[in-house]
Length: 413
Image (cartoon, rainbow, N blue to C red; front, top):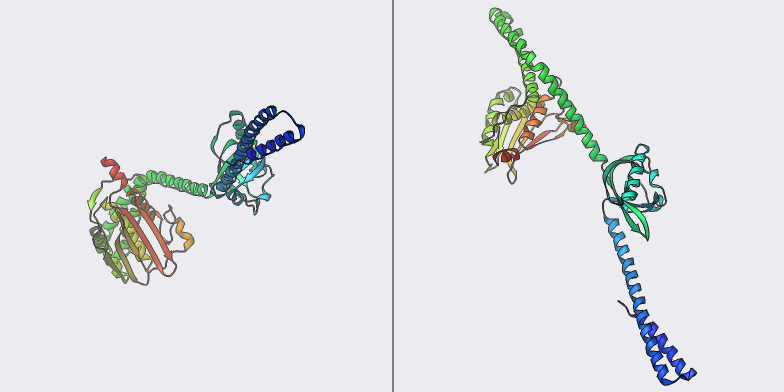
């Protein structure tokens, strides 16, 4: 703390004392007493002045540091009093679509709040003033300067700003998060519809399907000359049966029994099983495993179903033949990655986000349920299924599996 005030006041006192001594000719004893008293008072007043200056400068520095800190915070911060905006940080400028602070300062906060949300904002600010305690986050919609509407979560509290009572509001942009949530809700609704449909029709279809299949096989033995047509009918019936089976898995998932399995052995079994179909389509499947691939805990039959779906899709995407690479690698600690890389026609980039949704497919006779079922199985194993593709170059499907699913660990504890 500087001593400028004390030095100044004592100096002035000493000067006045000397004037009194030399010009007023007061008694020496009286002059000494008055001078000491004056110096003491000057020292005390100077000290108080120095203190006041020190704390004022400290407050000024603190306010400057406080503003600098707020400017670097990624959340949008707005300070307003009597509904007028007094301060906004850089993130707030960007959120409201302003090129400079002056575009926002001095405006009423309600000019940025969507009309449908203004009543809620008024109610919250009234409650804040009455209760004088921080308000939790609530969703609101803002109108930017460019007219674009964004969804935010806002929390507010009362503060003192530049000596006046004000309200500090922290805003988080949740527009993208809300879009993602809405997409997930739509997907859940589709899944619910699929489940209801499956529960209602799957069993009803299978009973007459079995009877039809039996009679066709009987007619096939009686009329061998028409065997080609009967084989075609049986093939189509088998396809219907496969679709119904996929419905049943979606409607009523079976209990998963996790066991330790060698992932290399599982992949090799499926490649052997589907290799005949690949050869008929002039396709070669090459398998490559990194050394020391760990044993994983999984449901064997479900993973086999996923691998069959993936390889069949790869084969169907390569009408002119080619090579499918199947690779297994250690992704990171306690995780294994399986790569299925084909040289097919590829998938347009704009269609990739919708893959795995019910009834969405790029195949002429597909249902979209095979890939959807695969996604669900991998999710049940706490894994990930990622698809990347380029048109006319091919598609890569990566399946990431933990060595031990978290759900299985929970069951063991």
